[in-house]
Image 1 (tube, rainbow, N blue to C red):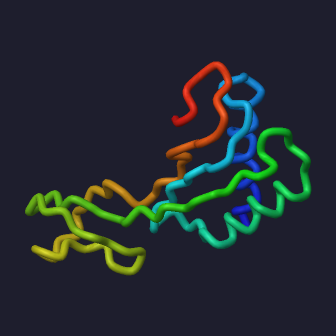
Image 2: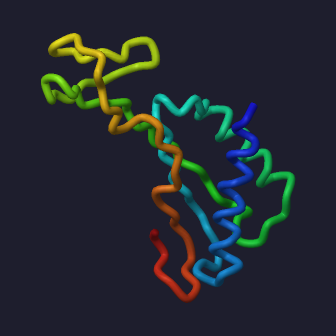
Length: 124
């Protein structure tokens, strides 16, 4: 379950914002997860909440995580159309070609942080 290490990484990033005095406290973090990233959103959320409860981290005690799923899409190099793809189907929906450039779906990133500001803005 690599979601535990991912949750630790997210908490470390948020803690760095607090330690660097950019934020005093963080109430909400939004994480984008691509459909092809092999990350289970429910497991990541569970790990994040469990770690916050087990650790007393000033400024993160009441932090809530919101997850946004990012759909997997690719551009066909043959017909130049954009198609939705999955792990099982990586073919162009238009010409049935398989020479695709994946343009989204592997994301795993913090897209927004909300909370009480320190010396910087309160949304990143």
